[in-house]
Image (cartoon, rainbow, N blue to C red):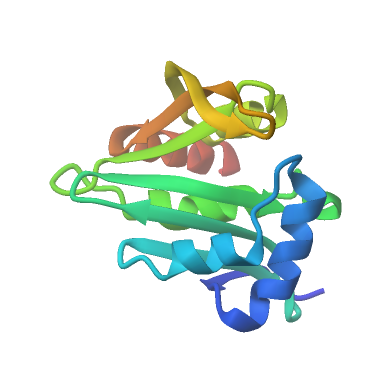
Length: 165
């Protein structure tokens, strides 16, 4: 078994990404949603790959101060193996005090697995946003806003390195 690498999300990855998306989410993105997001100048897609197989993906955008994770999923059989953390680490490693010092993620109130994942990565829930996510049928769902700062990431990384010694 090879090592997992994080690379740019390319068009050739899209069929695997769509499969993971459908298997993961109750309201999955369609191919058009991915293409629309990735056409934006400030939006980047990453994939975690091993042996030419996509294990997970992340779409994030950025502005002058903040990176925001827009979509992230990992194959069900690869969860709890560090794949999601590896994707988050790729962006968190870009956090700096001087420029983009915060990484955000907005999670559905009903998505406990994602909430626990982001907490485990070192994020903190900083607010709730009622009626943030639109769901079919004209209904809305609350979001939890999770944030990680450059300091949070440095602290988590240092703790992890100390435990590894």
